[in-house]
Length: 166
Image 1 (cartoon, rainbow, N blue to C red):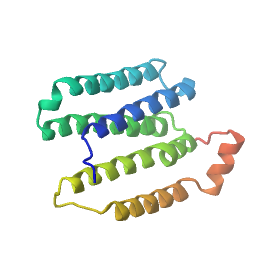
Image 2: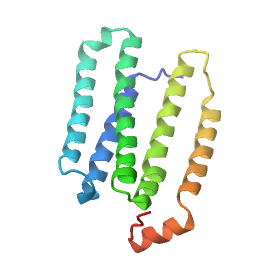
Image 3: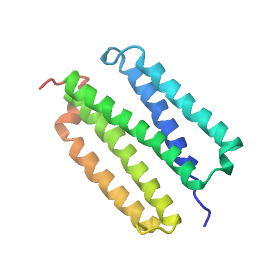
Image 4: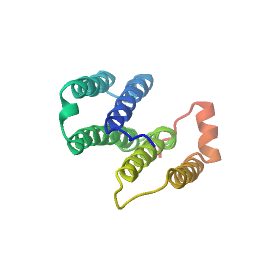
């Protein structure tokens, strides 16, 4: 089995920042106008890290590379949750917040946790899950989360395009 490089976490973080940029731009007036561009700069920062790590950080210890990449992924996940919280708490758009959580926040966190466990199991650490068990747990939790999040009433409101303020 091939070793999972720690830079995979940086790639996941870059993708999260780019999706955040796209979603905040598509949701228009619900977010500050500069926010999509800030997320794009954060994605460029991650790309710069990957370019730099290819050159001189490959000689660094793997644990150092892991912690840099893990910190970047954690920053991206924090941004995802913060944007979800902003829509729910500050704007009081509960329908959009539920949809955001079910379609983006929850799966993003689960995928990140899956890759962290996968990386950990390849290192031979104490917390080792086989990929099949980890994938089954991930799929089960994602299905439960999406089922709970998208109740029939929420789906009907999303189809109509109405936002419910509670």
